[in-house]
Length: 315
Image (tube, rainbow, N blue to C red):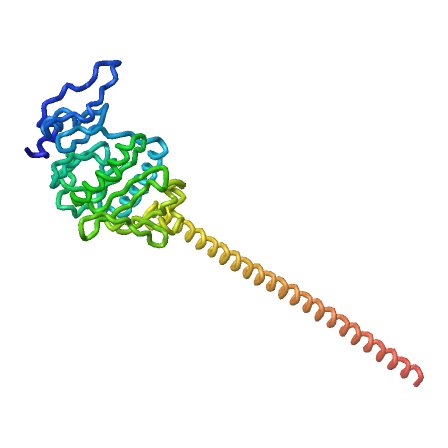
């Protein structure tokens, strides 16, 4: 039976599985049902989310709030990366995918799935389940029960590797419970070795993070100035800030240049005023000298006249 038909709500009859008002839904975890019945009656149930393991229903466990915060920080970081590097798409909202494995068929609903743009099976706008194999699966670990924890850390790890999921990330509030795997050439997951203290994805080249940041959870807006994240977290903001800084620097240079020109103009005006004052002083000095010379000549002429008069009297 085609899973694409089974997961298409337009082709499925509505299943009356909603509990009566005020009645808590009863878990059917462990119940044996056919794959067709799972797609028709359990896949779209919203009160209790089920996966399907080769004929048996498995209820998805719930993570605690702090683990959710780790998951949310990681998801938002991934959204920042895919906004600046749109090489893949993400899906959540309990979207499942079908894995035909040697030991049987499983239908899993990862907490977050990533489909690269070059995946042979594209993610279509109206898909209610993914009809291919995710390139990256992320699970927020629930450790309330050992069975739920082992499902993510052991069972799904083996299933995702066998199904060809290239990378698998397990998130948890405790760093010791976190895991980051990449598919080796032998089809077995190996831990992603940190590079300079960073976890770097091969499925999403350029996507990287510090493990300690998953628990620290710094504000994403602050990461745009962090050299680890600056190339994909709000790069347009940083570029706009850099442009604004450059414009401010240019404005400062222009203002300093205008100030320098104003000072030069003031200096020139002051020198011109000083030249005018010097010319006026020199003109006044010349006029005074001319007056003194004229007075001296007049006095000399008078003296000569007086001497001439005395000589005439004696004669």
